[in-house]
Length: 537
Image 1 (cartoon, rainbow, N blue to C red):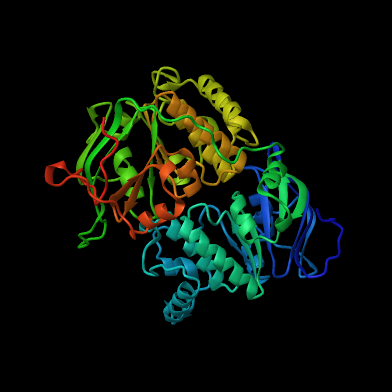
Image 2 (image 1 turned 90 degrees about the vertical axis):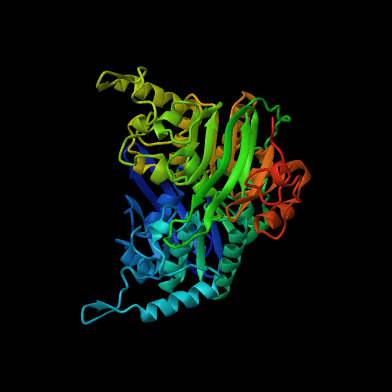
């Protein structure tokens, strides 16, 4: 571990004795970190440890109660993002700072627009964005609206925004949380290239593999305090996780073989048409499968191959153009979201802020969004606030949800990882038979991931059916009893995680490989392209 008083040679950023306080919590408690020129410094810590807060102080979004920031050896006052940009500091935010009804190009140039006679001049900007997209392999249509592209593509827009501004000091706040394994590999290569060009990177991530892959050093925070900085090459993942959490963490989950029971969720011939007018291709194409009690079925695929639309159709938050959905044998095809929620369905959504939470409600009310009308929490037209807060307090305790003011905390003010814990706690705890879990551990630290994985296994062993959607191959391999690979809206393979390699899963996900069809005509499984039958009762 390095001596924090070492020489300041080649430091491009020094954050010295930074303290930042919010109501009820000291987010950063006398923290000192230093970034060298031309290095990748990882910032590691549990959810709520203060990583994003510290980087928001550097980017000017927050003002510290005390402490000094030096950039290139000179003390600076950063009053806002414009000051940060003027100093060459850019930031890719964990929760995207994008205008949904603007195009990709408009979002990238926002704040740096060129005008002539009162009209926007976008030709030069378009050329630069296309060149950056090609150079850094961040392929994106500049004319697409943000609301029409996937979460992974929105992440690329955030990275392009920073590259467009020619920032020399780059803050990446959980940049890989929504990327596929292939996209993560590409981003790692991009980061290494940026370092070769003389840029310096502060990299917040919970993923120890990523730190080992690209970071030179790693600074660890725990509950707002600085723990130490280590050289990544000389430190194991187990040692890093123990530094971060303060105890040993199991990085793989133990589970006994599944014992599937009756069919809980049945999807037959589900089709979702493309949203673009005149575009005939189906984003979900005649998909059929079953999920039984006591098993975890994982939908694996590269982002943008229909997973989002499939789950949206099943849950009811998105359209379904044909097909049937049943839960416990009851036809749910045309039932409301509330009916599904009160008749066996729980859902951890892909976008926690858009579909999972009401950010301007406090934590307690977010724990009962699907149950507030039940007798336990209301009487007539009036909510039973005491019961709601008591229920919320229990979830906070059971799931280690960290917040400044407990159940009264405004949800918007919480860290992304703790927001995710609220949703997981709510959906796991309320009555259900089938859980749709979409990226359930996205943005969580290894300690929280360990806990959520154990909870999902406990749910499975308790007879619940779980349909998991994950872009993390390690998570897929750890949790799935069956893997259904989706490619271009079709299920192209059903795999046994114990009998297939990551490389093979990747080939199926990319469409380079598919299984042989068993049966022809009426014997072939409906809606399945070259896939073995499986999961039948």
